[in-house]
Structures are given as structure tokens and as C-alpha cells.
Amino acid sequence: MSTETTASVSTHILDTSAGRPAEGVAVHLLARSGREADWQALGGSSTDADGRCKDLPVPPEGTTHVRLEFAVEPYFVRKQEPYFAEKQADAQQDAPANRDSGAPSVFFPEVAITFAVVPGEHYHVPLLLNPFGYSVYRGS
Image 1 (tube, rainbow, N blue to C red):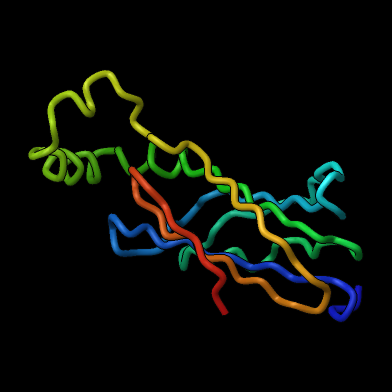
Image 2 (cartoon, one colour):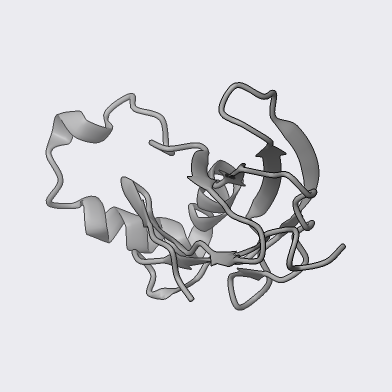
């Protein structure tokens, strides 16, 4: 496909609670052609050791909207294993007692980001992630 008639998408994830890339997060890409069109699943990838997905599929010609779906729950569950459990306990020592009692271990189990695209443009959409929030922006 020609890059003049299609958009391209890339992403990376930084775990801001750890100050490092989030490795092993599954990312799925969906596309649609028009606000009322159905979403078409195009495939996905997982973040590498640098937190990047370098092999996301190219949206088809005519795509107007793209959705990136990040499966972050498995990443945070892995982080709660021995090494991270000690760090997490220290960080939550000053947290209100009722905030975490009986609450799920992952507040946002998935993150879905939808954005508009135009042909010929590249869209790099970084995800800044922590256990209780996230932020995204159009990068370069």
C-alpha cells in the first residue's frame, strides 16, 4: 500500500510509576472508514523491551479513524510478583486504608484510544501509564 493513500500508526508505552518502558503489553489496532462505520480489527503486536510496537498493521485505504487497544492488566499483574510487590507495598504505605481494601489490583485493565487520521500522515501515539491513571498524546 502506498503511504500517500494510507495513514501509518506506531506507539510506545512508558510506565511512569517505574520510570521505564512497559514490556510485553498486547496492543491491537482497529480501523473504520467514517464515523458511523463498523470497526475492523486489523491485528496487533506486543511492546518490546523498549516499550515499542514496531510492527502494527497499516490501516487500509479510506481509514478515517483508528483505535489502539492496550491490554494493560496482564502487565500490572506481572508487576505485582515478588520484586514489585515489595515496592508496591512501600508506595501504598501512606495510601488511605479504604482505597485498596477489596479493590481490584488493576484500576484500568485496558486502555482504548481512538483518533482521527488522514492519508499520508504518520501517527505516533505514546501511552504514559501508571496503576491509577494514563495519558496519551500525538508524538512524532
